[in-house]
Image 1 (tube, rainbow, N blue to C red):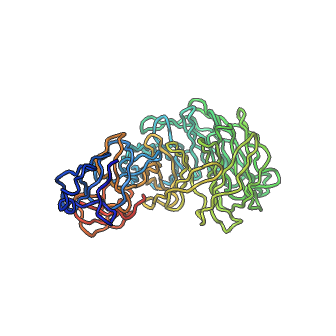
Image 2 (cartoon, helix red, strand yellow; image 1 turned 30 degrees about the horizontal axis):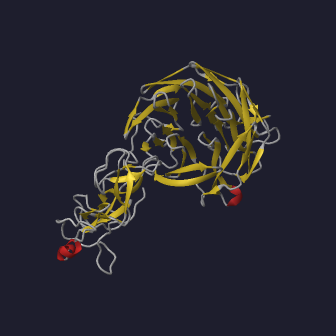
Image 3 (cartoon, rainbow, N blue to C red; image 1 turned 90 degrees about the vertical axis):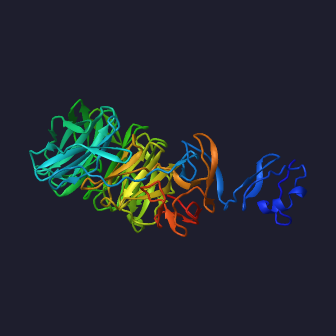
Length: 514
């Protein structure tokens, strides 16, 4: 068996100069020593019994299989399947549709058939809708189209996409008579059209604060608070809307919270468990902070609920956003536990029949992030929550939530509303003024720089932390270099720092995780 030639007593590969000085003695037949090489190179195996000269590395080198062709020197990242690919821009620049007036936008919905998202808003005298789309980092928008202008509009709006019908259902509160209006919307390109506006029966006073979710084929469930008995007691109610073509019909109000307790604030939320074919409603009752949950069964135009389940936690902040994870068949809610200094927790629920159970080991975030938005990322089976000026990726494994990367959204307003764009594989975050950014939360995580050209499906070397990559150009020696979230090209400075330039063509990889 051939042996590597090393310096006596040092246990390291021989340099070119050392081999030249002793070439005749070293070429013993055990290992054929090639001539040539350059100063500073070392001698190592190319394969069993065959030696070759190579540049001395700075440590930090690993082999990976490439997804897509990679050029030496390019920054590369690790994909969820363990392969590597070139780093792509993680975040687009801010984009905004053109509209007139002072519009206030609400939560958008995403159309999986048209690969577009629908934003709804209000301005003086009317409710409007705008269709948007994104491809890569480029946005396109339609014009603002009036939804309704027959009554004073309200900002408390919701829009839900139903994949069975390929339609969106817009729900909004009419300021006079305290009642809910509903309208079917159809997207074509960047245009939107509407069916006939329907109006529910007049309410008995109080704000509605709508929460809504898809509820199975052609169904949408709305959760809202409404005064009962004209006594200032607010209850949490549910109503089923059914989409048929461009029309919508609705069933009667169904009490969720119970006749003896009412929700005085918007502390409720709903999602649809497509595996169990059940709706799941979280709520807090008046005069109490206990977080309860009920499982509902939709039948025709009505819904019935099982017994209330005490989650074991308290909640004082409203606008709850539960989300269903179809990859694990779990319901996830991220909320602030008011019974524990408002520390944010993530609980995982499993629906069985008309009940739900929760694991006893919730994930604790260690800080109060309020009541975040939540969307399911179908590309890599994760959940993306939005809070403050951040998006954070979380994932369910078993009955526990695990935290991953955090992305900055400070270029748009705080606590931006979010939708997941399956076609573009990005989360679109939009604020109350319709400023939009697209963030690829599935982008590969920075691993290092390609040491060599690697063809698609081939295995090649990558310079990782601690290594020196010599395939760069135009660097300034001694400068820090980083990879900003919206770039796949090295830039000088400490933004997402990955290394220090040693020369115009080499960089020492000191750190790096995007």
